[in-house]
Amino acid sequence: MNFFFGINYKNFKTELQIPLFKNSDKFIKKINLYKCFIKNDQWNYKVLNFKKKFDCFYLIDSDEINNNDIFFLADKEDEKKFNQNSLMDYNSFTNSFPEYRANLKLKLINGGFSSYQSEYPYEMTKKRGSILSSINNLVNKNAEQNYICIKNIFFEPINEQFKGFLINYKNKKVIEEFDLLTNKTNIIELKGSQINDETYLFTDKFLGIPLYISCHNGHISFEHTHPPHEYILSQNRFEKVAELKKKFHEIIN
Amino acid sequence: MKLLIKKIFNNNNIIKIRNSIGLKKLYLDIKNLQNVSISDSFLWRTDKTFETTIKFTNILKHFDEDELSKTSIIFFSKNNKLIKHLDISNLNINNEIIINKEFLNGMEDYGVFYIFHSSKKKFEKNILISNRCYVGYSYKKNLYSFVHGNTLAKYTKICENEKISTDIVKTSYLLNKRYKIQKIIEGYDKNELFFCNPTSQIIKFKVNGSFKKLNKGQSVIIDVTNFKIVSIISNCMFLRPILFNYKNDYLDVHHC
Image (cartoon, rainbow over all chains, first blue to last red; front, side):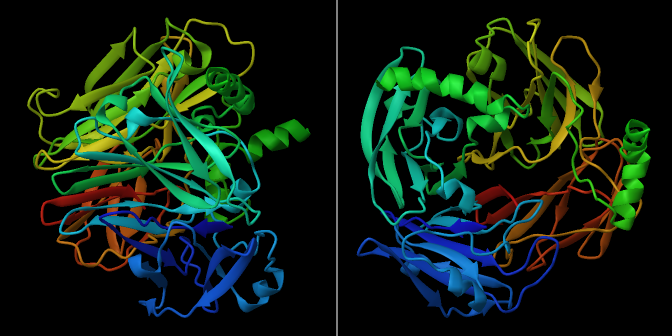
């Protein structure tokens, strides 16, 4: 199953579209939209009684989106599985091939817009690890603003601090170090001087989805990078990626 | 005997029959590939003031420190005619190429490109690599809107000078694969869908009832401005388009 999330930052407006059908056109009528958030060190669940668009989409706008809450689809029966101490795999509704796609649209006030798919797979919430992502692939050195959003969703209801790094892989040096939190959309503003083809984002201890935003002249680009194991499809993919990440761990240590 | 049955069951024509009747459907297949570099079908466009940028990682240099590896980028027209073939050595780990009409000898159109990596190195274990490139589209000289790779399409042996093969994506004899785009596309000035045929077979499909056909390697951009929701039915088991949404001079490009 998948969780969904949004971004709330400065001059961005967001809209999250969550479809109530699979891409094979299979439609499920009695499914609700839930919001999930941490309060008093526990997961809290709230059903959202939003009006459906065309009977087949839930639309969540900026007023309902912050950097902490997550959303998911479930039916009444799934509520029995809601657990205050752990996120669970409530249902298989958003499991499909090709993959289920929600849509998170980021808009600039009086400006452009850009979309990203916004799913965070349940399996990923159970794992710890490191993000490794080349920053130059999706931002523009000459843009007015560039940001990295690092979204982490962890199954336990904790806001644990972990470290993120910008690393020059060629010089084997840490350019910048920053604090991140689990179960949060973390937003880092990039300086133009940090953007080149040798700079990587690396995190220690926790995984997440790295999303990149560039803004220039009212236009915006928003997309995620693939995890490195997407480049290798053979059985030794995780071994190869572990070897590479080991080199980055050596730089930060 | 068991091996023979397995071989017959996985024959391409039998897979088409399986996909037609819904018996153990197969959408994509890479399990028998050995030491290959796989490429998606990536869209380039230079029509209507568009420029395209390709940002890609030299995978063999990045993961295997193979300084002598080469990268080939092969460009085809929308009708699958070869228009440019680049063989590049001495690349950085991360690289960028701008595709505009000057790069393509004045061509203002669209089509696909493929990216492959090659090496003379002997690999101890089977390795399959796939470049999922990030491709940006700039409309009217504005900021690039980026998408990543979407459809595994062609492959070649990592050792050099081998032929390019296809049919990772499987097909059916019938138009029975439904794909409903999970996005509302109302409220824009214009919407376009880009489709390419990632197979060696003829792909037939309907977009909200309108019939289309793509021969091997061909690609097409279809205007879907007047629809709120788009449903596709095809004989291709993985036909996921790229969506271009336009409003004023703003552009949003993404897989859908």
